[in-house]
Length: 184
Image (cartoon, rainbow, N blue to C red):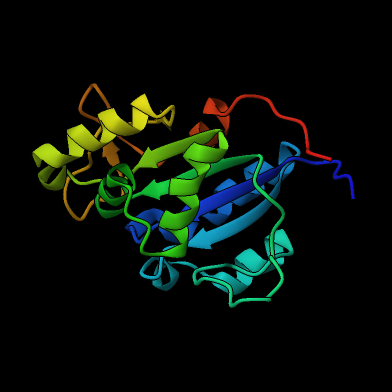
């Protein structure tokens, strides 16, 4: 069956801004995407899964399907990981697929699915050497990495380059993705 709209997977990780992930869903739908949300197991506690289901028309996924269970989403035309946490970015770069979200992200590379990540990492964690290495590896894999400026610990806003603060830019995920058309 042909689709008229491209399908975007939004992968949501456990971060303070995750509760606002409906903003990305709304922006994507306004720009012509159909959207399915995949939350990390810890990310589920940060979102309103029923509101996201109502906004997308699809259940929020977090766990693997059982054998024979139908796929709840079509294959992705693109993936946006927002917010992308320290834990998810490092595991993804290392090829660890111990959750549905990470399995999807690890497979996306082999499938050639355009993928963008918007890190939401505090400055203390970002100072760990594994973080820079992970971002470099993901970039080398073709992942488009958005605003990398770490935020202060326990702060919902990230410092801008001039030292002021700015809200999490959900729209950056869509700005970084190449224009796509739906698959048939």
